[in-house]
Image (cartoon, rainbow, N blue to C red; front, top):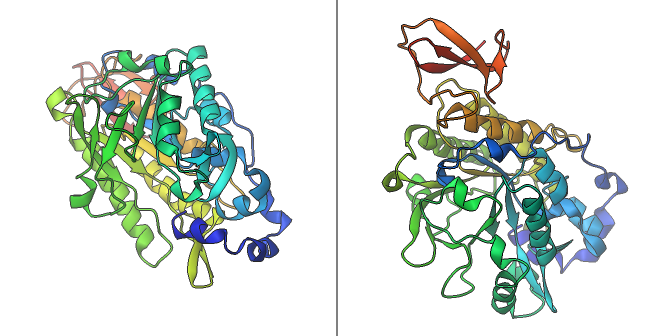
Length: 408
């Protein structure tokens, strides 16, 4: 929300006058269970850094805004689905932004409080993991300091993360974490240092720049000497002329790096956080440019399309890392064709085009030079096909053991 919600509290009455009931209608269609337990198909020895994980930006806005409902709907909503619904469609990375309230932490979007308490969100995710032990969750955590009511954020965070209710479901960061080590658990990575030692990990040198030299500077710090490079794309303002193109190029550059850099050994591992989210529309009020919920929707129509185009390319074999998006799990939000369900499904399916030992047994090699006969056809999520799916990417396996993605 940036400047947006810092200023919003000064002009609440004025803004409320601008809000119409039409702004309260949104997601079209209900979520399905397309994404239930998709991680069970990941080989246990897969590095977590090599997994493509669909996630949500400002996750808790999908829960609603309580007393600030109308303002939240107009200026702060980034999701149409609740956490439970996001989980159901396959989301496994959540962006939670706690603010310190009297006696508890609340999930906020800047100044704007959602109806979701932070402890309730973590307990809910814990319960989903208990019920689905093949899965794991990555949490991007950012202190929503603009929304603080009290000054005891660090104390409250530590107490919660060390609580009996959660401590056994949290895993500490290390560069070479494997899927087998995180099943049934959460990895919490914080952009704020709330203590000398993290529960999970701390990000350092986070950037919102689209400059590659800045995107490649961040690191993740775990306990002991556990550190790793993490490449980050979080260019969040796309409302000025040319900025959307800059965003998409930076997003695609990070995707392309994941395609060409092989996360196969501990020494070579790089983690990725690639934000599809941003806002491309603002309103001007008293000299401030204020983001809008439709701005997040509009941006999503462009960045989601670009990422889907990239993932459908027959040239791409490698992890996306964690992708945090707006309006995940819905293809239509209001008047905007966000393709958020389509993108979640594509990121999940993408894992099974490059990971070794997937259910279909297809190695992650491209085979333009293959001299073998076509032996088998598979969909990108590993289903054996009798004939190719037209207008879709298929995986062709040849008799010489090579394979390639082909768009029919």
